[in-house]
Image (tube, rainbow, N blue to C red; front, side):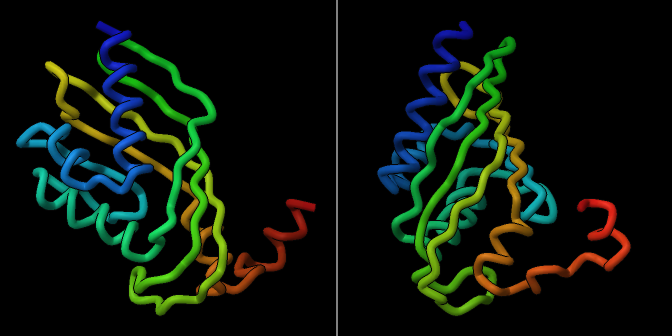
Length: 149
């Protein structure tokens, strides 16, 4: 079953890279749950997931994900990825900046009977906001920055 889950997962990333929202949405279970740090809560159902994904694709119409590594464990697939695009549309209330962005993240997906039942993801949203100049370059308190150097 793990090989099938990996295949379905790769098909999911291919649909996202093709910006095929219809194809991607069809891969989701009816009661699909999407959890991600940047969403601020859980999205339940296909239409909620479709709307959220449309927000990313509208903001970055050339957005592409590159898979760096995948690990399969039971019915879960863990993917480490990079995403690149250009901020050409409204995104999280930020008008287009025409800046190129590059962020990394990790996504866990759980597959049941060929449908994506749950997705949990985390990505460097802070780095994205700094690239869009929506956050100051050095927003951390000075004593934090001193520890990092």
